[in-house]
Image 1 (cartoon, rainbow, N blue to C red):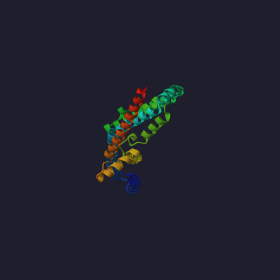
Image 2 (cartoon, helix red, strand yellow):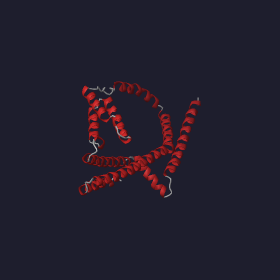
Image 3 (spheres, rainbow, N blue to C red):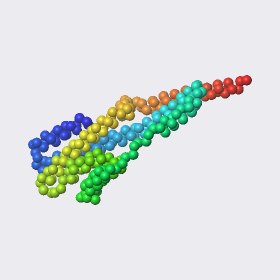
Image 4 (cartoon, rainbow, N blue to C red):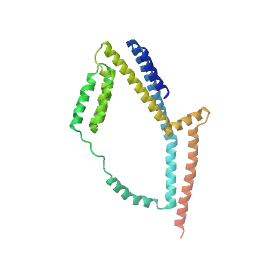
Length: 259
Protein backbone atom coordinates (compact mmCIF):
# COMPACT_ATOMS: atom_id res chain seq x y z
CA UNK A 1 0.00 0.00 0.00
CA UNK A 2 2.79 2.38 0.82
CA UNK A 3 4.27 2.12 -2.65
CA UNK A 4 0.99 2.99 -4.35
CA UNK A 5 0.46 6.38 -2.78
CA UNK A 6 3.38 8.24 -4.41
CA UNK A 7 2.39 6.75 -7.73
CA UNK A 8 -1.11 8.20 -7.30
CA UNK A 9 0.28 11.66 -6.55
CA UNK A 10 2.61 11.49 -9.53
CA UNK A 11 -0.20 10.38 -11.80
CA UNK A 12 -2.43 13.20 -10.60
CA UNK A 13 0.23 15.81 -11.27
CA UNK A 14 1.01 14.30 -14.68
CA UNK A 15 -2.68 14.34 -15.63
CA UNK A 16 -2.96 17.93 -14.51
CA UNK A 17 -0.33 18.98 -17.02
CA UNK A 18 -2.31 17.33 -19.80
CA UNK A 19 -5.82 18.32 -18.78
CA UNK A 20 -6.55 21.33 -16.59
CA UNK A 21 -10.20 21.51 -17.59
CA UNK A 22 -12.80 21.63 -14.85
CA UNK A 23 -14.15 18.32 -16.10
CA UNK A 24 -10.72 16.74 -15.88
CA UNK A 25 -10.10 18.11 -12.40
CA UNK A 26 -13.53 16.98 -11.27
CA UNK A 27 -12.96 13.46 -12.59
CA UNK A 28 -9.56 13.26 -10.95
CA UNK A 29 -10.95 14.50 -7.62
CA UNK A 30 -13.78 11.94 -7.78
CA UNK A 31 -11.32 9.15 -8.56
CA UNK A 32 -9.07 10.13 -5.66
CA UNK A 33 -12.09 10.49 -3.37
CA UNK A 34 -13.07 6.90 -4.13
CA UNK A 35 -9.47 5.78 -3.58
CA UNK A 36 -9.35 7.64 -0.27
CA UNK A 37 -12.54 5.96 0.90
CA UNK A 38 -11.15 2.53 0.02
CA UNK A 39 -7.75 3.20 1.62
CA UNK A 40 -9.44 4.54 4.75
CA UNK A 41 -11.54 1.39 4.97
CA UNK A 42 -8.44 -0.77 4.46
CA UNK A 43 -6.48 0.98 7.20
CA UNK A 44 -9.48 0.91 9.56
CA UNK A 45 -9.86 -2.82 8.90
CA UNK A 46 -6.15 -3.40 9.56
CA UNK A 47 -6.36 -1.41 12.79
CA UNK A 48 -9.48 -3.31 13.89
CA UNK A 49 -7.83 -6.64 13.07
CA UNK A 50 -4.75 -5.70 15.06
CA UNK A 51 -6.86 -4.65 18.03
CA UNK A 52 -8.86 -7.90 17.89
CA UNK A 53 -5.61 -9.86 17.87
CA UNK A 54 -4.29 -7.81 20.80
CA UNK A 55 -7.39 -8.63 22.83
CA UNK A 56 -7.19 -12.32 21.94
CA UNK A 57 -3.51 -12.46 22.80
CA UNK A 58 -4.10 -10.65 26.07
CA UNK A 59 -6.96 -12.93 27.10
CA UNK A 60 -5.38 -16.22 26.04
CA UNK A 61 -1.66 -15.59 26.53
CA UNK A 62 -1.13 -12.35 28.42
CA UNK A 63 -3.11 -13.42 31.50
CA UNK A 64 -1.12 -16.65 31.68
CA UNK A 65 2.09 -14.64 31.43
CA UNK A 66 0.89 -12.53 34.37
CA UNK A 67 0.09 -15.68 36.35
CA UNK A 68 3.51 -17.15 35.63
CA UNK A 69 5.22 -13.88 36.53
CA UNK A 70 3.37 -13.83 39.87
CA UNK A 71 4.47 -17.39 40.60
CA UNK A 72 8.08 -16.65 39.71
CA UNK A 73 7.98 -13.58 41.95
CA UNK A 74 6.61 -15.67 44.81
CA UNK A 75 9.35 -18.24 44.25
CA UNK A 76 12.02 -15.56 44.29
CA UNK A 77 10.55 -14.13 47.49
CA UNK A 78 10.52 -17.54 49.11
CA UNK A 79 14.12 -18.19 48.07
CA UNK A 80 15.56 -14.86 49.12
CA UNK A 81 13.33 -14.02 52.07
CA UNK A 82 14.46 -10.42 51.64
CA UNK A 83 12.34 -9.14 48.82
CA UNK A 84 9.65 -7.66 51.06
CA UNK A 85 12.24 -5.80 53.10
CA UNK A 86 13.88 -4.42 49.97
CA UNK A 87 10.56 -3.18 48.68
CA UNK A 88 9.76 -1.55 52.03
CA UNK A 89 13.17 0.15 52.08
CA UNK A 90 12.69 1.38 48.53
CA UNK A 91 9.18 2.68 49.24
CA UNK A 92 10.07 5.90 51.10
CA UNK A 93 12.86 6.61 48.62
CA UNK A 94 10.50 6.15 45.68
CA UNK A 95 7.89 8.35 47.36
CA UNK A 96 10.48 11.04 48.08
CA UNK A 97 11.66 10.94 44.49
CA UNK A 98 8.10 11.27 43.25
CA UNK A 99 7.48 14.17 45.62
CA UNK A 100 10.66 15.89 44.46
CA UNK A 101 9.69 15.49 40.80
CA UNK A 102 8.34 18.84 39.63
CA UNK A 103 4.94 19.02 38.02
CA UNK A 104 4.61 20.17 34.44
CA UNK A 105 4.89 23.95 34.29
CA UNK A 106 1.51 25.66 33.98
CA UNK A 107 0.61 27.07 30.62
CA UNK A 108 -0.63 30.65 30.58
CA UNK A 109 -2.88 31.96 27.85
CA UNK A 110 -1.45 35.17 26.42
CA UNK A 111 -3.39 37.97 24.78
CA UNK A 112 -1.91 36.91 21.44
CA UNK A 113 -3.25 33.39 21.87
CA UNK A 114 -6.69 34.70 22.85
CA UNK A 115 -6.83 36.93 19.77
CA UNK A 116 -5.61 34.11 17.52
CA UNK A 117 -8.22 31.75 18.94
CA UNK A 118 -10.95 34.31 18.26
CA UNK A 119 -9.72 34.62 14.68
CA UNK A 120 -9.76 30.84 14.27
CA UNK A 121 -13.25 30.55 15.77
CA UNK A 122 -14.63 33.32 13.52
CA UNK A 123 -13.12 31.64 10.47
CA UNK A 124 -13.92 27.96 10.97
CA UNK A 125 -16.95 27.90 13.28
CA UNK A 126 -19.30 25.04 12.25
CA UNK A 127 -22.31 27.38 12.09
CA UNK A 128 -20.74 28.91 8.96
CA UNK A 129 -20.88 25.62 7.06
CA UNK A 130 -22.99 25.28 3.92
CA UNK A 131 -23.41 21.49 4.09
CA UNK A 132 -22.94 18.62 6.51
CA UNK A 133 -19.53 17.61 5.16
CA UNK A 134 -18.20 21.12 5.66
CA UNK A 135 -19.81 21.27 9.10
CA UNK A 136 -18.06 18.04 10.13
CA UNK A 137 -14.74 19.37 8.85
CA UNK A 138 -15.17 22.66 10.72
CA UNK A 139 -16.28 20.85 13.85
CA UNK A 140 -13.15 18.65 13.86
CA UNK A 141 -10.92 21.70 13.47
CA UNK A 142 -12.76 23.53 16.26
CA UNK A 143 -12.11 20.61 18.61
CA UNK A 144 -8.40 20.85 17.81
CA UNK A 145 -8.52 24.64 18.24
CA UNK A 146 -10.16 24.31 21.66
CA UNK A 147 -7.44 21.87 22.77
CA UNK A 148 -4.71 24.20 21.50
CA UNK A 149 -6.29 27.21 23.25
CA UNK A 150 -6.54 25.29 26.54
CA UNK A 151 -2.81 24.55 26.30
CA UNK A 152 -1.91 28.06 25.19
CA UNK A 153 -0.41 26.53 22.02
CA UNK A 154 -0.08 29.46 19.64
CA UNK A 155 1.84 27.42 17.06
CA UNK A 156 -0.94 24.82 16.81
CA UNK A 157 -3.59 27.52 16.46
CA UNK A 158 -1.64 29.10 13.60
CA UNK A 159 -1.32 25.69 11.96
CA UNK A 160 -5.09 25.16 12.20
CA UNK A 161 -5.80 28.57 10.69
CA UNK A 162 -3.26 27.99 7.91
CA UNK A 163 -4.69 24.55 7.20
CA UNK A 164 -8.15 26.01 6.84
CA UNK A 165 -7.00 28.87 4.60
CA UNK A 166 -5.40 26.33 2.24
CA UNK A 167 -8.44 24.06 2.23
CA UNK A 168 -11.00 23.85 -0.61
CA UNK A 169 -13.78 24.80 1.82
CA UNK A 170 -12.25 28.24 2.35
CA UNK A 171 -12.61 29.20 -1.34
CA UNK A 172 -15.62 31.47 -1.88
CA UNK A 173 -17.57 32.01 -5.07
CA UNK A 174 -19.05 29.86 -7.82
CA UNK A 175 -17.23 31.20 -10.88
CA UNK A 176 -14.83 29.12 -12.95
CA UNK A 177 -11.67 30.25 -11.18
CA UNK A 178 -13.13 29.55 -7.73
CA UNK A 179 -14.36 26.12 -8.82
CA UNK A 180 -10.97 25.29 -10.32
CA UNK A 181 -9.15 26.36 -7.16
CA UNK A 182 -11.46 24.30 -4.98
CA UNK A 183 -10.84 21.21 -7.11
CA UNK A 184 -7.08 21.72 -7.13
CA UNK A 185 -7.02 22.14 -3.37
CA UNK A 186 -9.25 19.10 -2.91
CA UNK A 187 -6.89 16.98 -5.00
CA UNK A 188 -3.90 18.15 -2.97
CA UNK A 189 -5.84 17.53 0.24
CA UNK A 190 -6.73 13.96 -0.75
CA UNK A 191 -3.14 13.20 -1.78
CA UNK A 192 -1.96 14.37 1.63
CA UNK A 193 -4.58 12.21 3.37
CA UNK A 194 -3.50 9.21 1.30
CA UNK A 195 0.10 9.75 2.34
CA UNK A 196 -0.95 9.99 6.01
CA UNK A 197 -2.86 6.72 5.70
CA UNK A 198 0.19 5.06 4.17
CA UNK A 199 2.29 6.41 7.04
CA UNK A 200 -0.22 5.13 9.63
CA UNK A 201 -0.20 1.67 8.06
CA UNK A 202 3.61 1.62 7.93
CA UNK A 203 3.73 2.57 11.62
CA UNK A 204 1.34 -0.26 12.49
CA UNK A 205 3.39 -2.76 10.51
CA UNK A 206 6.53 -1.68 12.38
CA UNK A 207 5.11 -2.73 15.77
CA UNK A 208 6.04 -6.04 17.44
CA UNK A 209 2.33 -6.84 17.78
CA UNK A 210 1.86 -6.62 13.99
CA UNK A 211 4.88 -8.85 13.42
CA UNK A 212 3.51 -11.40 15.88
CA UNK A 213 0.06 -11.30 14.24
CA UNK A 214 1.65 -11.77 10.80
CA UNK A 215 3.59 -14.76 12.11
CA UNK A 216 0.42 -16.24 13.65
CA UNK A 217 -1.57 -15.66 10.46
CA UNK A 218 1.14 -17.21 8.30
CA UNK A 219 1.33 -20.26 10.58
CA UNK A 220 -2.46 -20.59 10.49
CA UNK A 221 -2.30 -20.98 6.71
CA UNK A 222 -0.08 -24.03 7.31
CA UNK A 223 -2.59 -25.36 9.83
CA UNK A 224 -0.60 -24.42 12.92
CA UNK A 225 -2.01 -22.45 15.86
CA UNK A 226 0.90 -20.57 17.46
CA UNK A 227 -1.29 -18.95 20.12
CA UNK A 228 -2.62 -22.35 21.21
CA UNK A 229 0.95 -23.66 21.42
CA UNK A 230 1.93 -20.67 23.56
CA UNK A 231 -1.01 -21.32 25.87
CA UNK A 232 -0.09 -24.97 26.30
CA UNK A 233 3.56 -24.16 26.98
CA UNK A 234 2.63 -21.48 29.51
CA UNK A 235 0.24 -23.84 31.29
CA UNK A 236 3.03 -26.39 31.62
CA UNK A 237 5.37 -23.72 32.99
CA UNK A 238 2.68 -22.56 35.42
CA UNK A 239 2.12 -26.10 36.66
CA UNK A 240 5.86 -26.62 37.15
CA UNK A 241 6.22 -23.29 38.98
CA UNK A 242 3.19 -24.06 41.16
CA UNK A 243 4.62 -27.44 42.13
CA UNK A 244 7.97 -25.88 42.92
CA UNK A 245 6.43 -23.16 45.07
CA UNK A 246 4.26 -25.70 46.93
CA UNK A 247 7.33 -27.84 47.63
CA UNK A 248 9.26 -24.83 48.94
CA UNK A 249 6.41 -23.83 51.24
CA UNK A 250 6.01 -27.38 52.49
CA UNK A 251 9.73 -27.55 53.18
CA UNK A 252 9.52 -24.29 55.15
CA UNK A 253 6.64 -25.64 57.25
CA UNK A 254 8.55 -28.83 57.93
CA UNK A 255 11.56 -26.80 59.04
CA UNK A 256 9.43 -24.82 61.49
CA UNK A 257 7.92 -27.99 62.98
CA UNK A 258 11.32 -29.43 63.78
CA UNK A 259 12.45 -28.79 67.39
